[in-house]
Length: 537
Image (cartoon, rainbow, N blue to C red; front, side):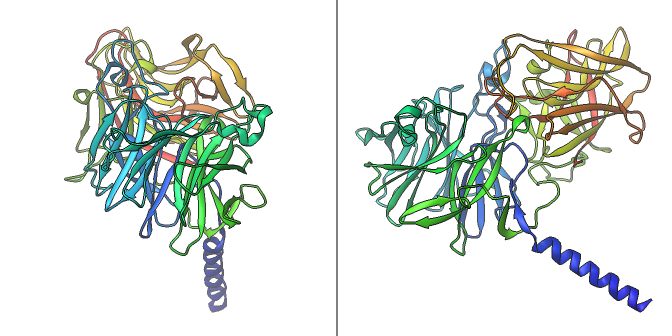
């Protein structure tokens, strides 16, 4: 008995040590976190990203080890009050909102900049604490595409921006606007000339991020050559911020590109980039960086490594998503930071109820479909395989109401409940798109929404007021499946699979799980969601 206990205890220690001694693996986060900008302040790393039409927006995450990330805050609650962001008058901001951001720390303050075709402005946000969220906001014209905010050692402040042609513009000392009479000039005529004159016609170099290291200026860009779709990292270097700049191809592997560099307290350097991965979106990869002859060398023998020389303490489910029982303690926020609304929410038509905790969504108007519906509450999906579940009470739906759980992108589908002629049914519905120019290898659609409608694939009568719903996503196949249960234990598949695709011209983000309720005949009905869970398969 004693020997068996010793063997068991030894194996337990060995297995625990083995798990934690394993190298960390790429991708760092198997979820849609595109356009990353990463900094370190003391022993804490911060990373901003893009969520476009979602509210709140411009998410910022934090980490102590570059591997495990959690939500720290958002730069804004609502980007702007207009018809596009409010889903009013047949307007929408899908794939727009705010785009690639630049996160910086200067003189005791965090700054993050972005730009928006929806507002027609460049935006800068400033705070002394990301977690407390007391952001000061500045906005100015024009729209500076893919801008990189930069505070130089001499007190001057700049933005570097553009696509293909990269420009430099000087800002006011507090970064609140463009400095009258300041420097404005083109510093790189054409990023893609690095590929050679015959390869200039691909994705123009953009997503610029500028860094100053040992007195030299380095600008990172994402680009693709003309002859093939191959996301690449190009780096330009100069002795002065105004140039002249010399460029080199730094990485062309597995469609991993766009981002910047950050160093550890021990002096090691890494590039945090994203990789295109089909319907789940653009997911972060950490790439080791070495220095050679004054240049940054990315990857291992030109490749993005599968493993990293960092401790493997990654949690099974990344902390940028989370299950929610909708129970709240005093002073808790109504919604944790993992949640985002599809466009600006109508705050008069949703609430968190107590005893027991639940989310209530009330319809406030009539909508044609899920894309136009107000108050769809979303979280990221996670890969390579995951599922979300919820329990919904439909006793107070009105005729024409539709509520449920969705795999949400431009080509979406859902499992839910529809009330018609006083009767409720469990339904599986999916949208149908007219598609052009699909890249089958990456699961990316360049042109979509040529025509869009949806169809009910299956409908089953529901005689209960409550039903459990599940959506399961397999990103190794870009397939989603839909289920229902009357007891939360025995699940029945409904409808058929959704072939998920990533669309550039609409949504421009990975699939999301979403809770929704909308009316097609009369407003005022409501449903209660008892919980939301997200798990890896």
